[in-house]
Image 1: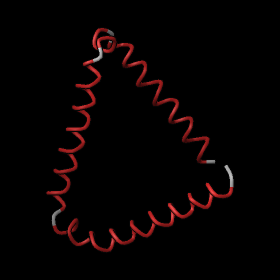
Image 2: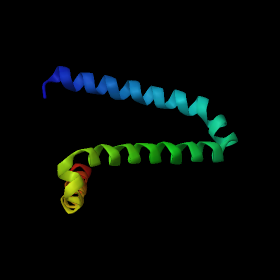
Image 3: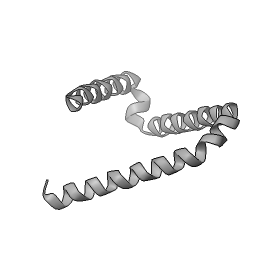
Length: 90
C-alpha cells in the first residue's frame, strides 16, 4: 500500500470513530429506555436477513439439489474466516 492509501484509511477510521462516539452519546438514552423493543427489532431483522439469504440460495438449482455441498461450503467458509481472524489478531 502506498502512503496515500494509508492516510486515507486513517482518515476513514478517524471519521468512523467520531461517528460512533456521536451515536453513542445520542443513542444511549433510547436503547436504555426501550431495550425489549430494540431486542425484538434486532431479532426480527436478523431473521429476515437469514431467511432472505436462505431463499436466494435455494433459487440456485445446484444448491437446492445438493444441500450437503452447501453445508460443506458453509463450514469451509467458517474455517477460512476463523483462520484469517487468528492470523490478523497477531
